[in-house]
Amino acid sequence: MQRAVRIVDNQALDIAIEAGNLLGLPVVAYFQVIPNYPNANLRHYHFLHQGLRDVAQDAAERGVGFVVRKHPDNSIEAFLEEAGAALLVGDENPCREPERWRSVLAKRLKLPYGPSMPTWLCRRASSPQFCAAAPFRPHLKRELPKYLVAAKKIEPAHAWKPPKALRVSISPATSARASRSSTALSDRSTALPVARMRRSKARDFVNLELKDYETSETS
Image (tube, rainbow, N blue to C red; front, side):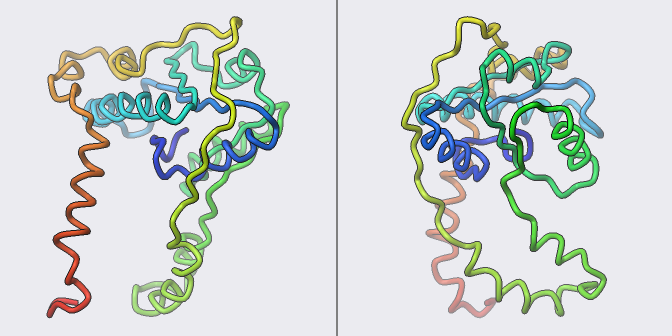
């Protein structure tokens, strides 16, 4: 879990659950907290801290494991070995540096691994022939029906139970604070279900504010 730090509407997780059900295995999401993410500052870690609390709660409700580890004890290879993993599914990231991370990881792993999210539209958008929005827009609209579809609600057939050999991970509620020590990360606002609150506000905006958008003068 790296690009989409969430349980809801996470294609990589859905694919992992499908694979787990076929293999008769449970699913666990793994997150590494690192103190030196490129260009990250304290506000980014604060935002991450808030979101991880919701991820942990959503994962428990869905029957998916969620493990967080901080540097320097956050080797994904060590975690996969301890968990007895049979397959690794990751979310794709078209940015150069994260894509390089995934390429390096794929060469090191001893089990099947692959990204899950195609970035066809992103790669087409970066083509020299699409140097502006106007020529790209018709191509985008043609492809929208393929991608704007509701995600299937897939539930794991086997609940995650941590193996005895699995080392105790840090709490998602304290992961960001452990990564960057600061009193700002213990702000009272972190007690709120941040992601759920934002999803609720987004639904209200779409259902109430945009209900007449197509027929309005600004459409």
